[in-house]
Image (cartoon, rainbow over all chains, first blue to last red):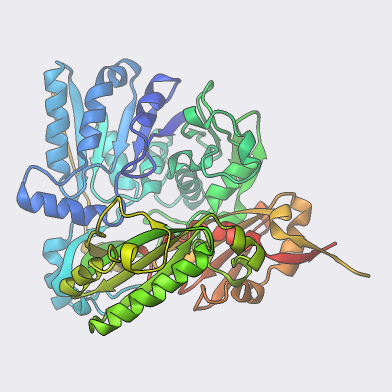
Length: 455
Length: 107
């Protein structure tokens, strides 16, 4: 049995979770996810300004902090912290090891960055159409800011086989980070689809960190113990493809069939067709069993052959947006907010401003659910202590969005009464980086694995 | 026989998320024996009706009996999705409990 811990569900997750996973109980591997869909475009911009940047600096700081613990306990780390510059991330980690006089073997997995090859692909008829809308890439080609292939577990497995203690990748699937050590330790074959599917489902279960150990969990949420010290998830993986999800003893949170089921269904499409670069996993085959306190055992998972494609994540500049808000207080809070919305729209109209999208929401009065049955009844409406008017616009035209932001503050003095919320000043204009999913034949791209050592 | 109206939240829990402009809602029976009630009552058509004005596209339902769960895909439900959306909840994270407001016939 091997223990694979997740210490980070997304870039921006708890800084203490990976340290706790290393220090508060036994683990063999630590996996960390740093890459959201828009992260790559941020990193591309950083690298264009400084060729030594373009990766998750948080990761290097964390590794520097725990390096002696990793060496002492023999824990290996797998992280997609390399962003668009895994080599620079590796150099920074080796530098940290050098400063602490520790020897260290670090691998990079790269080759996922296809930004410079897009025109070559298009010229050769590799289309990269949007897999949701079918639109051709030419529609946004001029605005592309990053383009990366999602690799799976096998290049990471190769890095582990070559002795890497830390594996730094570019774009690798979250599930691949957790599956790789199972393939490496248990010698699973590339076409052992059931086992690859099991490891993939284990990876899916832990990829959002504490979201499977009691965080954001609905069943009896008030009785979930000590979320302030919530334990992050650990996979106890067996060579036969069965595994148990648990967390370190003495940590808060809860691992039961309910918390695990919620995470299994998170971001789910067709449950029979969970497609990764490594296999197609079938969620309708999973058997769950409470195997003790904070222990859920998975068995009987079946999978099918992987497809011939990698998924590609392309980010592109898609105009500008700004969102402003004002707080209206009782009495008639909701009516005042609606009146302010009508006034604002008349003023924008009078200014001749046109937007690709405009949206009004009333926080406190059905903004989240937005469905007819969630509208406040007249009685509830009368008691609302406050309602937040939240108004957003989007446009290709930055000047129009800028002009909109000037229309929010005046409403405090020249609109409906008893209003607050101007402490934040004018709304900020944001550049929108949107996401373009596509597919590419696996034969078009090859992962590269490099291993370096600090001796 | 008159069947009692119950809110779905008494029988089920849920988690929701996004893929572009599509929201997914996983709906899970609190007790395995209630799963057939979910299958019978919470049809794709009823979910589409429940999310009137929010879900502008098709609703697709998948059954996952081994987990006592249904998965719904609500197409065109996130104002364009991701960073394009102007919504307070651009990833549909709160649609899970929006679904749990539904009233159903439960025997």
